[in-house]
Image (cartoon, rainbow, N blue to C red; front, side):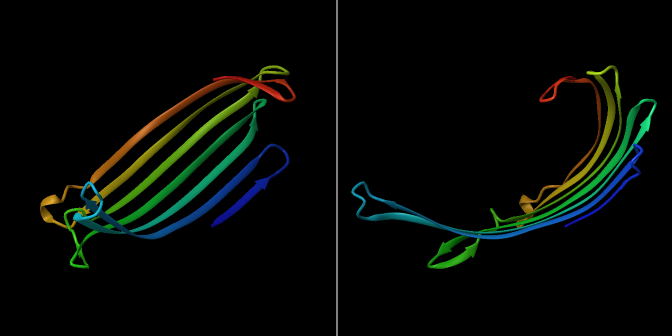
Length: 187
C-alpha cells in the first residue's frame, strides 16, 4: 500500500511525503525422499525421508519525506526516510519414520528479525555554467537490527544478535549535459 502527498508551488519549492506498507507471507511444504539402491539398482539398501514445513511472514513499513527549495542560484534538498522490517520465519524439519512424520528438533527453529533504519540527507545542486553543475551532499543512516534464532532444544539456543551502527555518506560531483542524449558526471 502507498499513500502519497505532493506539494509544488511552481516557484521552486516542493514537498513529497510517502507512507508505504508491504506484507509478504508464504507457507512451504516439501517432501524429500532419499532412497539408496545397490549397484544394479534393484534392491533398496536404505532410505531417509525428510519433510520440511517453512512459514515466512514479512512486514515492511516506510515513511519518506523530501523537501526542495531554490536557494542562492541552486536547489537545496533535505529529506528523511524511516523504515522497519519485521520478519518471522518458522522452519520445521521432520523425519518420516514408519510412514509418519516425526519432528526433528535438532534442525527445527524459528528466526525473528527486526530492522529499523533512520536516514536523513541534505544536498545542494547549482549550475557552474551552461553545461556543468556542482552537486554536494551528506546522508546519515542509523541502523538498529536484532536477529533472534530460537532453537527448539535448549542446548542449541544462542543469544540474539544486535546490530547498531551509524554510517555517513558524503558525496560531491560535477554533472554535465554534453548533448541532449549524453551526460557526463564526475563524482
